[in-house]
Every structure is written in C-alpha cells, then in structure tokens.
Image 1 (tube, rainbow, N blue to C red):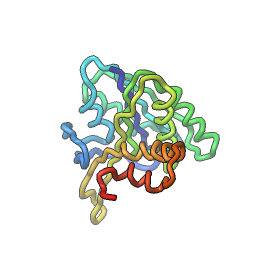
Image 2: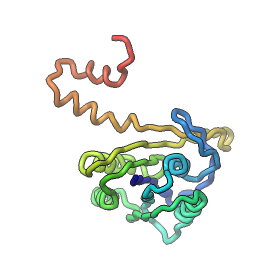
Image 3: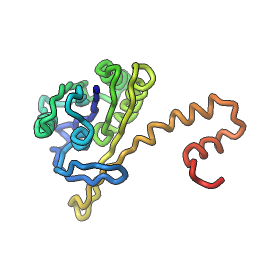
Image 4: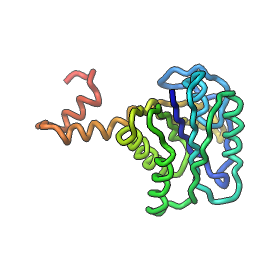
Length: 205
C-alpha cells in the first residue's frame, strides 16, 4: 500500500524544535517514544512492511539553515522504516501568489492510489488552509485516494514549562466542507437543522 505523510517544518529562525512524548487524546497510539514531530508516531503506528512510504516535509524558508529539517531526518531514520523524503520548499511569504505556489508545489508532489496522513501543528497561520485545500485536492481529484488522518499536537505550559503534551485526531474537521456542500446541493428545507443533524447524529432532536 502507498502511504503519504505530510508535515510542516518550523522555521529555524522561530525556534529549535524539542521532543515530547505526547499522549493520544482521542485515538489509539502504541508508539511512546518522545518525538519532535507529531507525524512521527503516526508513521510508526500506521506504516506496514512492504508499504511504499513517502513523507512530504513542507517548509517556507527565510534563511540558509535547515536544523529543524535535519532533526526530522534523524527522527525518521530512528524508525527504521524505508521511506522517500521530499523537501517541499518555498520562500517564506504570505502574499497571495506565494501561497498559491505553495498549494501548487504541494499538490504536484501528491500521488494517486494512496492513503494520506497529515499533521497540522506547525507552519504559518495560513498553512492549515493550504493543507486542507491540498488534501481536498487529493481526495477529489486524484484516483483511489483516502485521507486517513489529520493530527494536531497541543502543549500546555505552567510557569513557562511544558506541563502536558497531547495529540488529537482532528480528521472530523476535514468533513465539514463536505457536510456544507451536501446541505447546499440537496433539496432540503431547513439546511441549518440538516447540518446540525449531520454534526450530531446521536443527539436527540
């Protein structure tokens, strides 16, 4: 099976990334070693022998340094899982054309016949919008693809120190556009009620 994993790489000028043993808050996870990147335990738990593994490392650069990317390379190597790492790099720029170029570069690296896993923890504030659109492209345009998981790591701090590290599967949020499209495209009198029903199917009306 072909599995494609996507993570953003933090800007080296912002901070040096540190490892945490994050607890899975709303899904099952067996990998317990500390990791800098939330996608690492996902790769460890989902990749199987014989899978074709591709990792897309998305980064916007504003310097010649690549410390955080190098840390990710080392982390992947510790897993011992054969993989292809693709450095998806664009200049750091939040202008419209730069963001569209990031979307184009990311989607150009995507492939048919694959399961996609993505981490939305790192990156600029505009990056999750680009990532969500790229994943929607993979699901709607490419052949035989599935978005299998989207994740986010939360760090809580007390007196400046990290107190807890939790990791969430936020894949449900990826379905919201589909629910809205479904409500808009159907002959439904009360579209708000329909959306609420789709969001909370077990809730009493």
